[in-house]
Amino acid sequence: MTTGDSTPRSMTDEGGLASGACHPMLAVAMVAAQAAATLIRAAAANPASIQIREKNPNDFVTQVDVASEQAIIGTLLGAFPGHAVRGEESQQVHGNPEADHVWIVDPLDGTSNFIHGYPVYGVSIALSVRGRIEHGVVLDVNTGDVFHASLGRGAYCNTRRLRIATRTRLQDALVATSCPYRPGPAFARAMQMLGEVMQACAAIRRSGSAALDLAWLAAGHSDGFFDLGLNAWDVAAGGLLVTEAGGQVGNFRGGVDFVETRQCIAGNAAIFAALGALLRPYAPDGAGS
Image 1 (cartoon, rainbow, N blue to C red):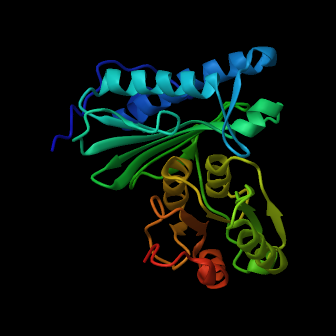
Image 2 (tube, helix red, strand yellow):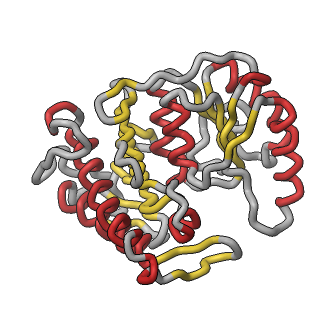
């Protein structure tokens, strides 16, 4: 196994941060996210040019998703040719397939929002090192805010340190979700799960971008998050933001493994525990520990 070169070939200041203010791998991820955001903004300004294809029922992809992913891959592998990149749209690993350093990329999280001109979508990039998420960036394309974190170094929005909200009672909590909405055998159970949480908390929000939901949770704008059916690229960067802001992230059984289990609960310790107690019965058999 190889870890690849740990020093980027080039560096540019991005996201309102000096390149020397953060880990060099995180700095390159921010450059990559900004490159993708530039493409997305240009396309959003000319909606008639957007080409839409349906991957699955209610699951869309555009040429902007693909171009954004290609820009990110080019930036990351240009700086770290020994690394690997796992992208949502290409559904394959680019670069070194034996690398210990694997970038997990969602080039446009919130594609349906983007297609409709609903201004909630972002870019999510995380770095997994031997299976542990060590760096993460979530860029809000419409506001320009760059949420970023490195393991053990805290979470930030641009230069502002993030702290998770302190409410401890689920009945007072604003809870975000990307609860499944696509037709299929799991839909009825998902609606039952959503109904239970809705009756237990103060309010529910569904933005259409799990990456931004987790970033906003880390910033204290909401109190909890839950979802069933998300992929690694949806939650990897946002999950690190939450933990580095003082929160907890895990699966429906209370375990810490959430990136690959397609189930995620997040919040401060009290909200995490309350959501876990409520959602444990909905954990898929054998998933998470």
